[in-house]
Image (cartoon, rainbow, N blue to C red; front, top):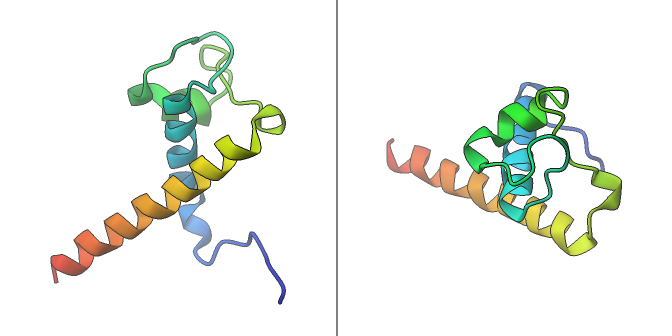
Length: 88
C-alpha cells in the first residue's frame, strides 16, 4: 500500500499548519524570540517565523511529540466534522 502526505484538499494546508503550530506552542516547542509563547499567538509565530524570531525546529523534536501533534490534529478535525454534521 502506497502512503502519501499529499493533501486531498490543497487549500487546507494553511489551516493544518496553524493547528500544528498551536499544538507545538502548547507543548512548549516554540523556540526563538518568543520563549514561552502563548498558544493564542502560535499561528502568527509559526506562520511567519520572522515575526519575533519564534519557530519550531521540526527536525529536533521527539517522535513522541510529533505523534502527539499529529494525533491531536486528527482529533480536532474529527471534532470539527462532528460539529458540522450535528448542524445538518
